Image 1: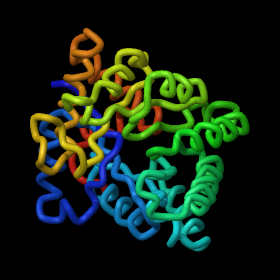
Image 2: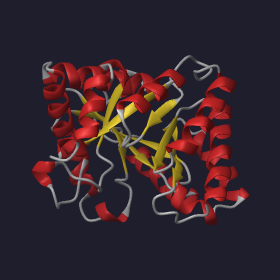
Image 3: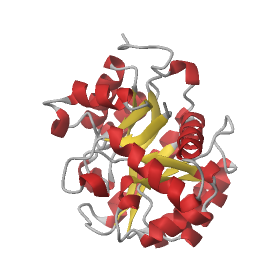
Image 4: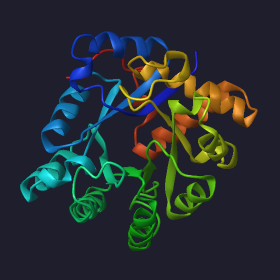
Length: 278
């Protein structure tokens, strides 16, 4: 069976309250060896961490989403940094800028984002970056941070991943040079995903990871339904088609990329450690 990894989900949220264990079980049955569930506020990140402690398949990330930046206090950001130090937390995220919806003032989004980049530097964990209609502002911010970090985390890992990447191949290449990976969402299967398809064709496989962003953005075969981690296989199949390589190669390479990026040893996956964590 193929080894797959969903690098971005929100399965700790209420959308999965009725059948969360079944969803996680189905993902493991379908070959997933890891799922990251990402917080969007301090309280929400605590729930992500709690879920990761109950299921060995699940890892957590802690962060304030740009939509929630306006309400984030300094105390919240301090709390998030403490959460981010937990061994079950493998990233600082979901963080970033969203100038499409502008649910928080732009200057506050930027300030909260900068503070969380500082958190990443202090805890030595990668960032999961949300950037929607904000790359003109995001790129120089990350250029500056990358220079300060020497283009890598202190242990040599990439600085982070550009989540649900929605810009063009040239911008993807720019982020690669700064020390970031590119996340290919299950929307790559949609008929109108021509720009993302070009990103996949142009970006070396060694810099790609896969995600579902569950419950959002189900792949074409399940369009209109709730997305779930098991559907990351749909992205793997489409990436293989676009690159003209076996799907097993895509699954194995993107999974190894995820394990390296998030500092998860292969021995920590349920393939060798079945059942729930304490």
